Amino acid sequence: MLISPKKAVKLTALVLLCSIIITGLSLLYLNFRSRSENRTETVRFVFFDVGQGDASLIENGSGFCLIDCGPEASEERLCTALSAHGVTEISLLFLTHTDSDHSGGADRILRKFKVSTLYLPAAGSESTDISDIKRAARESGTDIRYVCAGDYFTLGNAEISVLSPFSVPSGDENSDSLILRVSYGTTSALYMGDADTAAEKRLLEQYSASFLLCDILKVGHHGSDTSSSESLLEAAKPRFAVISCGLANSYGHPHPLILHRLRSVGAEILSTDLYGETVLESDGLNVTKK
Ligand SMILES: [Zn+2]
Image (cartoon, rainbow, N blue to C red; front, side, top):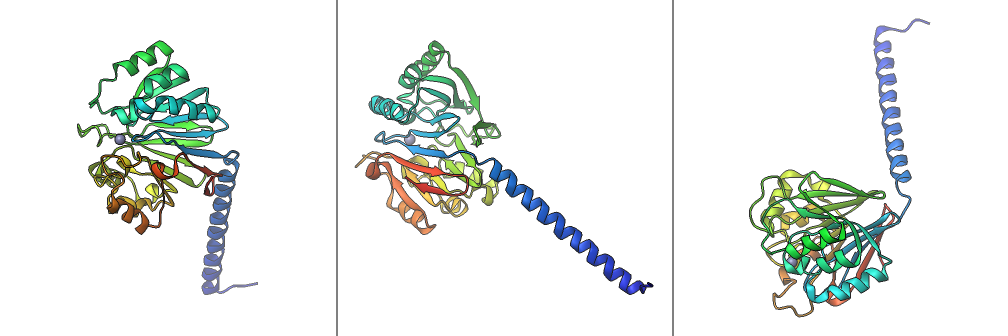
C-alpha cells in the first residue's frame, strides 16, 4: 500500500508520540514500584516532653536515632522515656548545637545507652563547654563526628540528610544549628534545631521549595519569633508542627505570631508543654498522629 509523504509524516509523529507516552508511563510505574518496595516498615517520630528544651527520637525496625538530649534537669525523665520505647542502643545521636537545653542530658545518655556515633555541627562555634560530653563519649566508646550540609545517613529505609550548617559557618551557634531532613517513602520531616531566620534564608537559597515541603516540622527555636519566617513556612507547608517547650516558660515560647503563621499555612500545632510526649507515625505515604 502506498502512503502519501504527508500521511507518512503524520504516522511517524503518531508513533513517536505513542513511544514517548509508553516510556513515560513505564518510568512512572518503575518509580512507584521502587518507592513501594522501599516501604516495608513504619517510622515513628517521637517528641519527648523535656520541659524547656529539645529531644526527639526516630525509630523503626532497624534502630534508633536521637536528636538532642534536653536539659540536664530532665535527663532522668528522658532516660525513662527512651527505655519505655525499648531503646538500649542508639545508632545515631545528633546534637543540633551545644546549648544546654539541647545538650545538657547528653553525657547521661552516652553513659546509660550504647551510642554508636555522636554527630555535632561542623561549625566550630560551641558556646557551651562540652568537655564532659566528649569525655562521656570517649569513655563509652562512642565515635564523635562533625557534619555539615551534604552529609547523609540511613536508618533502615529512612534517609537522614544534613541541610545545614554549610561549610562556611556564620559564627552564631543558633544560626549554625544542624538542620536535618528525614524522609521515608514520600513523607518527610524537617528538624530545625534553634536555627534563626538568617539560617532559614540560607536554606531557601540552597534548596528548592519542593525539597523543603514536609509533613512534619520540628519548629525552630521552640516557637520563638526569631525563627519560622513566613517564607520558610510557605515552602515547608507542614501538616504537623511540633513545638518543644516548657509550660509557662520565661521566654514566652511559643510566640503568638508564630502560632498564627503556622495555622495560616494549615499546620496542626502540637506542643510538648500542652500535649506532653507526641508520637507521629509514617507508613511511607501518610503521617498520622498516635
Ligand atoms: Zn533551644
